[in-house]
Image (cartoon, rainbow, N blue to C red; front, side, top):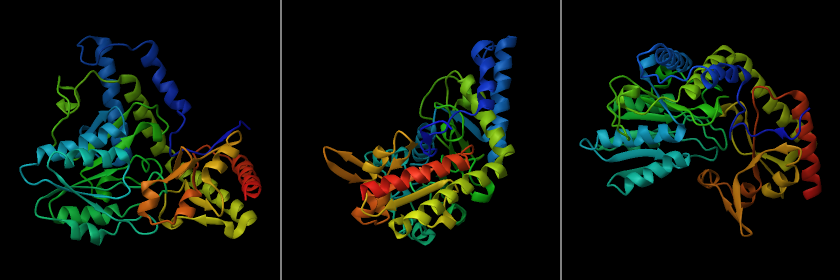
Length: 379
């Protein structure tokens, strides 16, 4: 068993071996520019279009509704700014939540400096948005609702279908950042009722540096950069063939192995929690409703323990992340945990543990023992 045990899959995933194999020819042999008319260019163009089909199948959309980007941050920027600039004649009001990733909140802050108004809808104690509060926030000048599908930090799944129905009833464009959910739970764009959906390659066992944005046909969006006509002119620039091929393969594997992977990540997460509770009892506090949470994610606090001390103590054996930051001896609680109104002591004791599709029972049992021993020594 290789150590340290990696249990921070929400931060990033290793690249799947099948994805690596798919990439290699485009590193070693197929170097042509996809815009070129000769054969090595055409073959690369075909590879990009194949990847577009593979991504589309995973989220049940048409291939020409997929726009490749460099990452989820770019996809979010393209979605939010693109809709804002394209629809500013209709209105300048945007609705989002208090627990979005900085790739959304920072875009909204920027737009607020450009004359747009942003409404930040609160969440409940489990980090979930109430659709009724979305409905109440809508104004005649609302042009966009952007709510993440599942939270990266605590794993809470948002009521996207209900919000999508509200958006459609009010003729408002609806975007969801699905970086954490694609491949873990169902992300059928029609079932969700979204107009735009963000995908992150490195959360899906593809490399860092590739993402995609689903743009429903008929959705008017203004591009952020200008150049030639790649990606239908929405995202110009010579295609990143190597990573695009990788994302396509990762999506194909995710769709093929969806049920198996879903079972494994939830089995691993639940085995971990059960092991911790069996040995630490009430000292373990789960921050979210696990019935409405990503199947691989556990946001948990250990009573009277510093999350940073715990993560540091076990770092040679197990890798996890914390829900707070420590600078110059001062602890700062994440905006997500603040929005959930967790008390300071619980938030400062919170860690995020996220399992992957290849996490084994042996690794989980080892991690349980490492965590239990660390908690007992630090208490």
